[in-house]
Length: 122
Length: 112
Image (tube, rainbow over all chains, first blue to last red; front, side, top):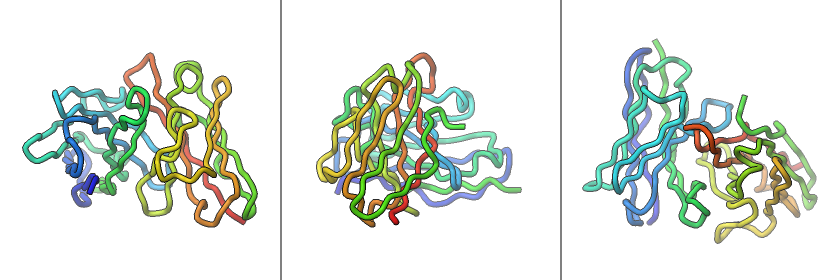
């Protein structure tokens, strides 16, 4: 079954870091970029960044640069996103999403994980 | 404030058609044929319903269609059904910055 399965909910204190995983199955892991998109409660979607699992190349949205790291583990078909220096503004549902090859330039997201809730609270 | 502008809500009766606009700039919506649309039901992950402005993935109802004029893209839902009640987000590739993918704030569709 083609799917992305994410790790469970996290509760962190301000200033801490969080690491979320996203395990791919049912397709060639190294054949698609994996993006991370977040959604605060009742808000829209916000692109965080993406990783190419084949070579490990990454690209991050400007507001997260210096604070986010994305890595891939081909042995387990898993990508990880670590966000440091958490504040209450980082409280959100974090989704991993696959860059779709059906789209020109692979610029759409054709498969999504179930989401991981990250709560930042003192 | 989301990079792409969508109406907060639209509504329509069963069987009617509704359209949702998505306005950006020449650096994103207006500059590329890379607009996609996502449907999100409460408590679920988004689902791709339109890519490359007007193409539907396999399995998506033909009642969903997309178009674009200048810096504004549109999603039209024809023959509105109860299961269409959801949030809809547009997205586009953006050039000229490191923030390469941008989204609209989302539009809640209500079926009357």
